[in-house]
Length: 193
Image (cartoon, rainbow, N blue to C red; front, top):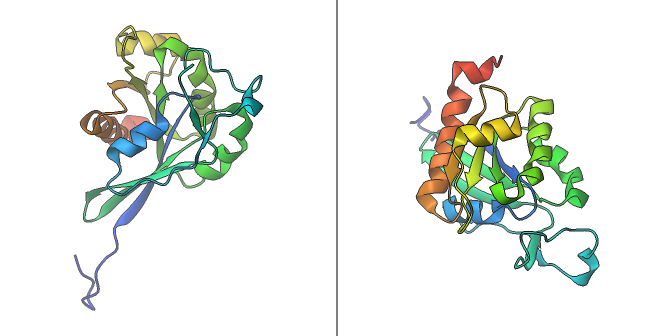
């Protein structure tokens, strides 16, 4: 679409956060959906993190995001989603306030084997009025819970959607983003009870 002076209209940029606890798959999720090579700020986990970062349940993890991940996905010529992945460790939470500035919504990734790791992310978005969906990242070998069971365990408000996804799979992760966009456009999500 062009303006009256024949110049091209720039697409509307929509900022979305991909958040959750340490090791839930945020970097993988962004890598799966981004149409550009994602910007990653991953560093090796070193002995310095012993006693600071719990690797319980994710013992094979060797890297960690120390600032944020960034990716982009074009919805159509008028809309582009800019994805910002948050760091998961408590010691990097000071970045969340900056990253959330201007965000229209968030995907909160959850690992049901370590459900307690997502409570802080849910609280963060609820307290700031940022709309979000919870995406259960179905890791290999983990028990499969129904979305209603996860919603109950997290004591989510009725308007918060819970979806399943595989953060490694482009189609699955994209469907979680589609669900978020639909949630953002829903009149109910604009005036939650």
